[in-house]
Image 1 (cartoon, helix red, strand yellow):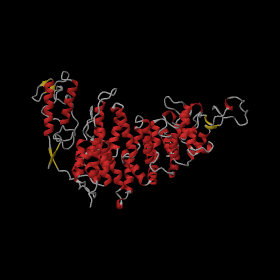
Image 2 (cartoon, one colour; image 1 turned 135 degrees about the vertical axis):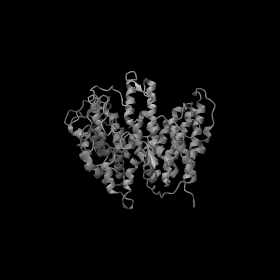
Image 3 (tube, one colour; image 1 turned 90 degrees about the horizontal axis):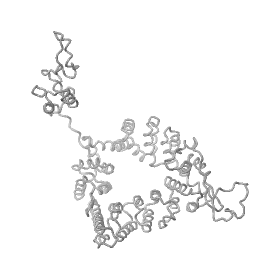
Image 4 (cartoon, one colour; image 1 turned 90 degrees about the vertical axis):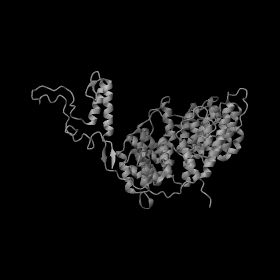
Length: 609
């Protein structure tokens, strides 16, 4: 038998069997006046000979505390009336009664047996490392100088990803700490729950603090619940129809990766009954494995009553190579862009019109240019196709509409429209009337959306080109998105060339899209740039972001080569005060982190035969 606390009201309340318990209407203190034999009313005082339910007494104490004992004096446990001290005494007595009011209850059923996890156990050294990482996770951000010790909290994601690659199971004794870490950091959850496996989900069902694991793991459980480990159609349907929004979005994403057509059919079945904000999030899951089979569904979504849903559907359709939307947008966009073969820009001559006078601006050809005539209105057809009519603050209407048309137009349209020129040649053409920034920015968005490597290379230009001479874009955000469309090897080479030419000031976003660990050319370029900054006496904390990336992304094999940079140097004239010591600490921390990463990988490596 076990003891349980009584609920606020119900069958387990100690005073429940009394005639004045909550099952019966409570009689007000002055309600007995009419029933008194003499016809006089009793004073409005509580009946001390009749105990009241605990929660009623507590409510009365709270009321007296809120009103003040001057207005409603408290009754002390001894029977008298008093001020604040009497109120506190009564509250203390009530607390003791509540804690003592326990009634024996039948023991609850034991939880079911934890499922088996067939994955191999962690090697002993890797288990000790995991204990160390989880014990350090609660440490807050470093205040002031970080010192030379590695930041273990930043290495937990890498360790979990490596353990999952090797297919190990989590030690049962460490599951609570692992779930606590995942609860505190959402970025850990995918790797942590995969590592925790079925036993982690079983344990999460016994603690409401770990409920997130059930929500995030429910889709995977449904997809593995059928015969032979396949998807359980009934479980998938039930979760889709009755699950929480987070469970449904996770389920749709998981189904999309396994069976894109099934995910689309699942969404289409309930589309009309979903809320607008939910339709937007569900539609976004179709980005994974987007194909021409999705065109009909997305075309119908263009008629959605939500503007954001229409815009997202149009964005997805414009990422496909040959769609009805792409053809409609191309027809609009090509009417806005024309090739002007005269010099000096200006609108192209009207067919059949008079030739320009000799000696005028058009008589000295210097090569063709592009002339832009942006839309003058955003009609209903454009809005139906996802064009947002109201521009953001600081943006003109015509340039806003023009950019949306160009970014939704298939890039293959432009060479055919503009004289068969290649993407690189088109990007280098001058654009009249300061429309180059709008046109190139729209082409950048189109290249990213359509994953077009040729246009991405043309818009990126040479990595060594001076910033003012870039032919496509000088925006760090656009540059990193274009770089992400290229193969991994090419990304590293381009980023390395850019850093060697321009340093690290605009390279942080570029580094974020490069594969980890960084390829050798990129790693050398980053370290050389850091060394140059140190030699110049620059502020080391200005490069803390890049240094943090290097700790996580450099090849661990570079540690020995970097050892020479850890030696403190004498302060140079004109250098930032204390910069030498800061740089030495930063490089020592970098080297120690790389060596720790190498040790982690070695500990996780399967033992030889």
